[in-house]
Length: 153
Image 1 (cartoon, helix red, strand yellow):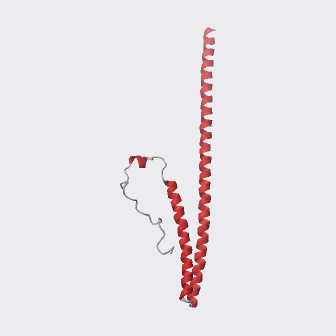
Image 2 (cartoon, rainbow, N blue to C red; image 1 turned 45 degrees about the vertical axis):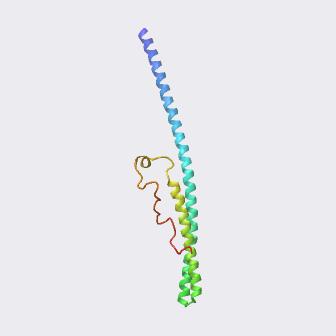
Image 3 (cartoon, rainbow, N blue to C red; image 1 turned 90 degrees about the vertical axis):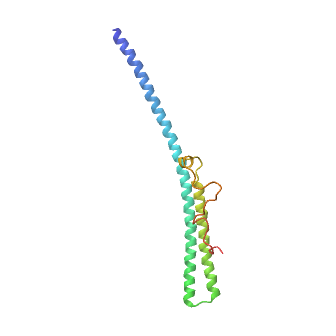
């Protein structure tokens, strides 16, 4: 009888501890999952904002492209008809402005993207690897840093 009572007490204690551990693990899993979901919702909101920004930029570029194509078609028609030099120059300048405006939109968009890609905290590469150029040297300009000369004139 004493052994049965001791066994029952031991089983009750072990079962109680086991139930508490399982309950705590279930609660912790719920907390971590809800925090992860909140982070994913925030990230989704940021990515949605970026997608909307990119769609707006694409819509502007489509408008600029349509204007440039229309101006180019007009220019080709004027050339075929043998228009005067002044008329051709005005049409070519209009086409150049449309293409230049598209270049400005692309330049602004790439600067925004590059600014967002700048690491805000040290990464393995920025912490452990030496930079390719000393800090006193200016970085080289890329192909998209400036529009080609003559497009915006």
